[in-house]
Structures are given as structure tokens and as C-alpha cells.
Image (cartoon, rainbow, N blue to C red):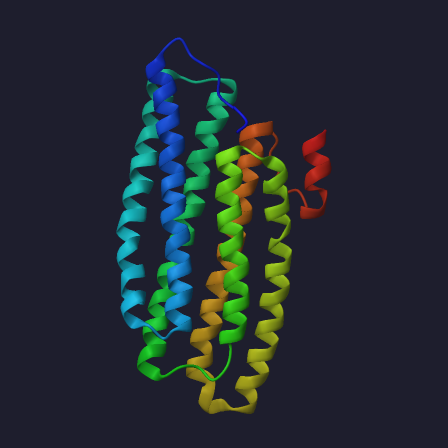
Length: 236
């Protein structure tokens, strides 16, 4: 694993930075499971699993608060500089992306409960499965990139958000056409559309998380750099 921080005179400072990093990865693992469970609950029409996803949000929020407190305490007491400061700032921003992914997973779970009550949608589950697999893989590989501080992997994951957007736009066109052909399906299809919208946003948050990692390692802000230009920007 690439090392970002250096050994400090204070072993306690080293421990604090490592604890911060581990708590971030722990939160990421919880969110990853939450998203996967939300998708599976919908595909299986499983209201009980959907309820569990909504309950997991409390753990995500707890970890979010813990990491925020740790970042603030380190900034106030240690006054870090250089790579240490970038690490703390990047994690404080990336954890917000994770928290929003969890919020989207909770939305999917609530929409699943609506579909359980109304009956499964006649269309859209194939698209949900496909896009769900894409964003789940993005989350997993984003966290893996953070664990290894691998910006090459982060760039590859960020670029895959374009594929999610293409799949999402194609699914929207198909579902809108279906609703016009069968107005009786509108209520159920709208729930599916909102699920797909949440998945698309999760892909966006995974991309942003990768961009925060690039800043952490390289000190380069790439939030507004076109995806096709990421590698060139980082190599300068």
C-alpha cells in the first residue's frame, strides 16, 4: 500500500490519522452493503430487507458524526500541514459523499416498500439490476483505491460514471415510452424511475469520492476537470 502520511514525533498523532482512515473505510463498507441490500430488496420484492436498509442509516450517520469530530479535533490540536492536511480535508469531503450514497440507498428502500404495496413494476427491473451492478462495483473499487491510495484505479472508476449515465439515459427513454403506451403503469414506473435516479446519483458520488482521493494523493483539484482529461491533469 502506498504511504501518504509520514511518521511523526508523536505516536499518538500517527494513531489518530490511522484511526481516521480506518473509520472512513468502515463507513464505506457499511454504505456499500446498504446500497447492495437496497438493490437486492427491490429485485426480490423483499420488504423486510428494505426495512433493514433504512435502519442501517443510523449507523452511517453515527460514523459520519464520529469522523467529523475526529477531523475537527485533529485540525484544532495538531494543526497538520502538507499531506496530512490534504488527507484530513479530503476525508472530511469524501465522507459527505458516502453519507449521501447512504441517503440514496434509503430512498431506494422506501421506494421498494411502495412497490411491495402496489405490486411489482412491469418494467425497469432489468435496468435496475444492470445499473445497480455498475454502481456497486464503483463503490467497491473506490474504497479499494482509498485503501491502497491508488489514483490510477481512482481515475478508472471515475471514468466509468459516463457508462452509468449512458445506461441511465437509455433506461429513461425506454420507461417514458412505456408509460405513454400504458398509462395504467405510470405509478409503478415512476417508482422505478426514482430508483434509477438514486442509482445514477450514487455513481456521481462515487466519482466525486475518487476525485477527493486524487486531491489527497496529488494535491490537484480535479472536481471540474472533464473525465477524459483526468489522467493528463494528474500526470502534470
